[in-house]
Length: 351
Ligand code: 1HN
Image (cartoon, rainbow, N blue to C red):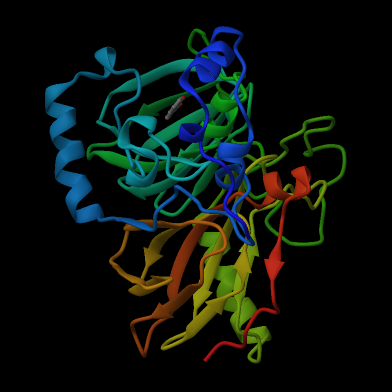
């Protein structure tokens, strides 16, 4: 490929004349805009240790009252984008949020979609669109775009959860805003147990007819049991992965980011295919190593890491006698809708 002319190759008076008219020559930037063969992501493979985050987050609880924070969050920022951008990848925002006993994080709604993956503690709840969703370790709670939500805590110990939002892409689209509200009246969790069995859809009475998001809480107890049953039922299958989906449509739970629960059998190593979307891994249970290209992250429970798109990712269970359970988030729904989703080569067999 030939090198194209650089900006410096143009005479200063010409460059100044362009600038004065809000004009820019394309050719000096063309190769950076369209790299050869594969993208050059800013997203860097990054590991965030829960053992490092936890004391800093608890200290935030002492330093900043909830009334002065609204959401007490430490953002898991990818240095490849610059920490101030507060993004884990092009489309994914990650944050660890702390709620102390008796605290209330007031109601608001906003355009970015959010999910919570509960990491620690008992007694907290999120009310989403009036539905009270209890938060237990490993539960996934959806806060889809535009729905009112607030968090409260009736327990006795700190509660911590991982927030995953599509904020960076919504912000980039200049579509990000919020509206504050007042305390919602609560209904008990309507989707609790209603969609607990695959292939059996409750009809009319308990479904949320016309609701775009019929299921707001995905209990970990059910996801974990489903993975163990899948492993038993499919002993030959290497990738034991469940997609958090909308039980009424069978589609992704949310429009922009995808969410998955994955189990690694004892001692298993699983090589993922090269795919265009960036990915996030959060270890719920066990011990796992995530290899991203030439970097290796040994995840302890509640650790989180990310991998850029088009990178070779290999997951290994460090234990030979117990399974490992991971929560994953990625940009697949967005890439598919935009028509830029790619998977290169067949999914390799696992060891
Ligand atoms: C938000 O609304 C929450 O509701 C958490 O708990 C994190 C990060 C950016 C923008 C809005 C929440 C957020 C957020």
